[in-house]
Image (cartoon, rainbow, N blue to C red; front, side, top):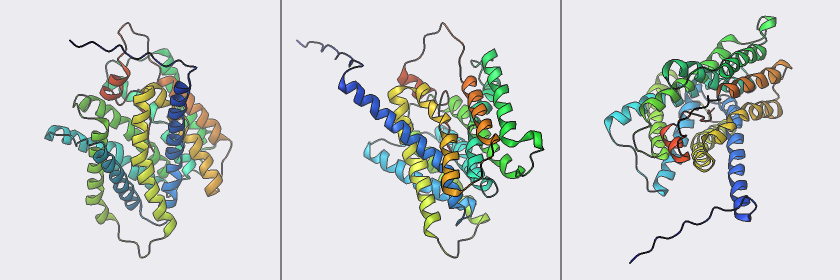
Length: 334
């Protein structure tokens, strides 16, 4: 006769084990914010020695290597089914191949600080699109106000009152288009890949791997091999891929699984701050007063657009929310 084992009591908030666990996810949260914030600096340095498509291809290649190694260590397997791989191909284009390339091209003419701030507009684009594509995301006064505030923040960053003088319109438009692509991609993933049953690691590895193949097909037609390879740009591309794409995705999913997508999404608001600090400190980029002020307004608006109306429907469990709904409260990537 077997006896059911009583569940272990939850650790007290004052216990050492609880504090250690709390510190652990906070440390990983901070590392994730640093990696994604510095990604814009890595892109800038990488484009000093390589063409934008080459930077993106290298980023995806090294990112795939890290994710594939993690897949082997965890003895997980890639997703199955032609339909799933078809959706992954679209997601790879919208979330990796296209935005990564757009940011690389944008940083040829705009500072990394501006690119990082443009990345923070993804939640604003996501709210606009979700109102159209997702029936359960209904507009509220707070979210509408957040969209308006965010738009004012974007105009502040761009210096609209002075006619956008000194601003490279093409580069800025490419960075904003990259952020828009992220928003479209997450909505697409939410609608097509939430019920596959595959793990986050499996889907991420397949998605980044497909994006690598997409760039491998495109890059030779638009670039030529560099006559010489400089060490610093090469190291930047390796760091961008291995850390910014591979390791950062592992950190992201770990934090989401441990503390939930809502808390994990807060990393979004640290990325432009770190990107700005890195660009000014290490690249000597000029920072006018309207850039940090506008960035703060954008982040405030983005935070307001992520609020949800109260509902009587029971909230899904943390595990279910993180697997079935990867777009809701999901941090954006550089």
